Length: 160
Image 1 (spheres, one colour):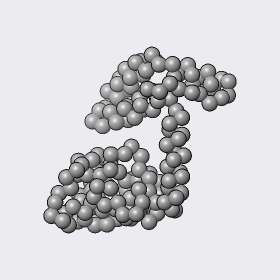
Image 2: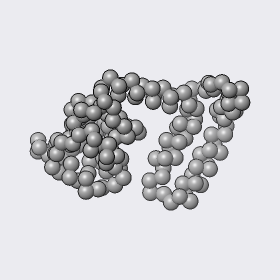
Image 3: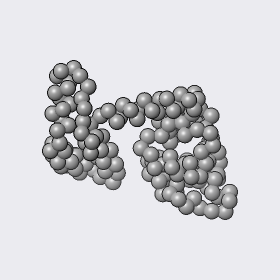
């Protein structure tokens, strides 16, 4: 994210698994200033990505107060802040390329299991993880990754 990330920009951000921004980014849940409750998902997703309905979430949603990249990072709305839009795009592309180089089965499984932790006990999630991984053993990704590791080369994976 960069520039002015207001309203829909925040909503799109909350739909992402990883959020990055440039240093000069300005954020705002602006809808109360125009006589609306944010209606495209911000009020549903922002508390979830922030770990619950916190005082901070209510403050920014009710006040339409603008906040900057440093605050977004401090409260955990973004995971990294980059000095410029150009560096943000370059590093974001590197991160996406790195993730895309991993086993798609493992990436999907990891994302699914992380998302499933909400509302579950550790014991329940371990059972879920075991079931998920048992099903994923049907793919060739583990064999490909281990074989490539033993040969000290980069693995290639089938597309999902």
